[in-house]
Length: 127
Length: 113
Image 1 (cartoon, rainbow over the protein chains, first blue to last red):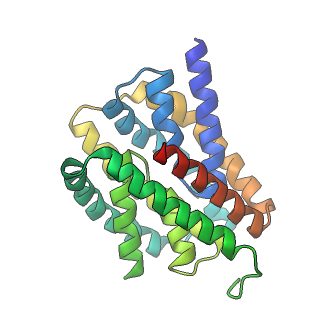
Image 2: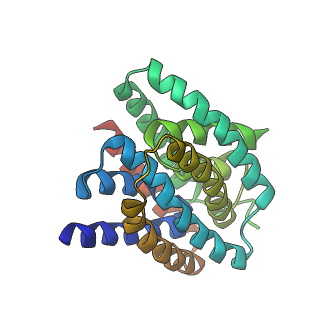
Image 3: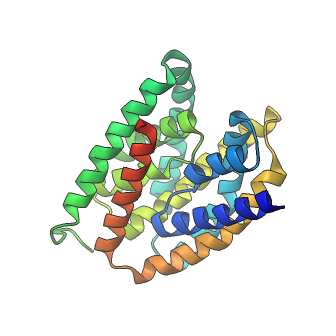
């Protein structure tokens, strides 16, 4: 009972992050599903993708009303990502996981720093 | 062309870590495709929908889905997402960008340790 409540609360929090920042929430769903609900990693990753669907549907519905969604680029991104998913599966089998984690971790720090730096000065291409 | 590259990267990340890939799509749309924060985040949501749908169907065919567990986190998350999107309209772009940077940094540290 408590674990369901905790999982639901973490889900709600993931949803707020999803709506606020335009991410799916999977980064919080996967640990919630494994650590709180006791799913295996593979079941958690699969079920996380399913949980993302109502989350992004609700978020996109709001964003559509605000007029922020560009549908054609979104579809191009989605279609290209499917190619990436296939490649990702191959790479995941070829490279050790900790190397991948390190690589993505470093990349993200660089991107975070760039974004933070960019927001320090007034944007020259703001709409 | 840039969109295709961003999409492929997001798909890679998605497959490797079992997430939707928005964490990759948003900053790359802002930095590479020159999107403003709000359109980048909204467009990312729609793109994740496509990625997650294909991923979920693939896993469903392999019988790996746990719909009950997905509903426990996914349904509260849908309510949270509406709330998050409403807040997003009221937060200044700069704060949004800094907040997202902080989120990225936290995830980066989590990946590194």
